[in-house]
Length: 218
Image 1 (cartoon, rainbow, N blue to C red):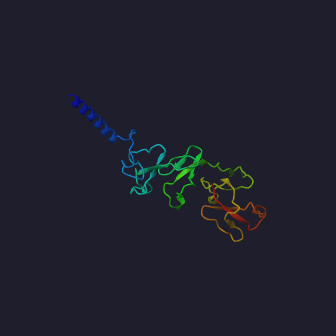
Image 2: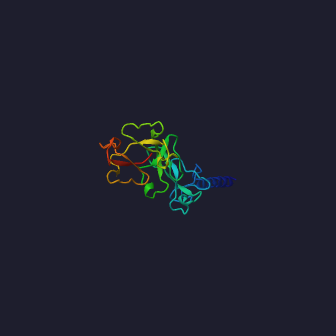
Image 3: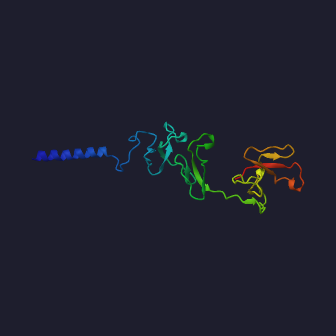
């Protein structure tokens, strides 16, 4: 009888040890080995699998599925959040900024969207103030140091018969590309030539062949 009890106790301890070995993670979360990758936990995809706390889902460059070329529901990999100076935006998930903020490229990381970087994460910064309106039927003036140019974002075009088109005030860069003048230099596409407010030549006061500066509308 005593031998039977001892054998029963040993059996219970053995069963408990087996159970502990199988369920070694009390959180129930899978390890990297369990999800089949040493790069990080799989995330996103059709099931929208989340990442652990402190990590985010990034595009997997080793995957044959690429969202930039039309791939739908591409899975990603979980990586630690990069250090940054503001809330993250953009990236693989296209995270939006809060109201009043705009997403700009994060200068502290090595991903550059201007040089082939796909799905670069960004940071949220305060949105720039809306440009001051000028011109129009009221002939609104710009503050000192700024010039009025046609607003390319509206449907009124002074070069196509539009009368009293409103404009926007811009501040020319004194070191920007020069235009106009005696040689009639042209600006790059998308820019407009305005009188250079930093020189002493004023075309409205009879100055002939005044040089200008190229500016872009905000």
